[in-house]
Length: 102
View 1 (cartoon, one colour):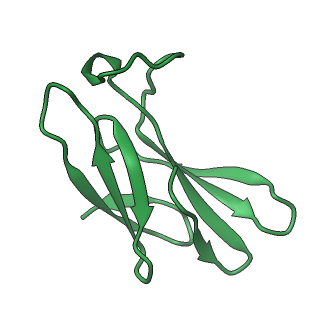
View 2: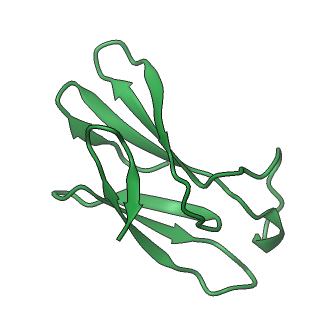
View 3: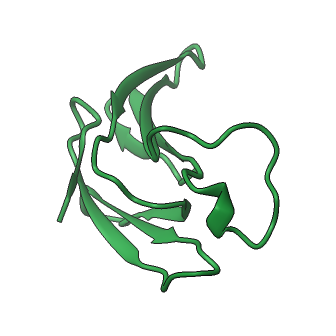
């Protein structure tokens, strides 16, 4: 998961999920995810998290994510032992939580 992006009394939290276990150096437990990035809204008053958006863009194993400190951008770094990794930039909509590849 990455650091939250604040917007009024809510924060956005993006959870990144492994989508290809066969490309990892370690063997995670559970099942691989169908989608790679899930955006939740966190209400800072009561701590409730609500799913806002799920990216449909395919990104293999986004392992590390960070928000830009001043812009509505998210950077994700992919993880693989068989392919070169990528740093993918996403534009973040602070209202809907939708992510769009830049």
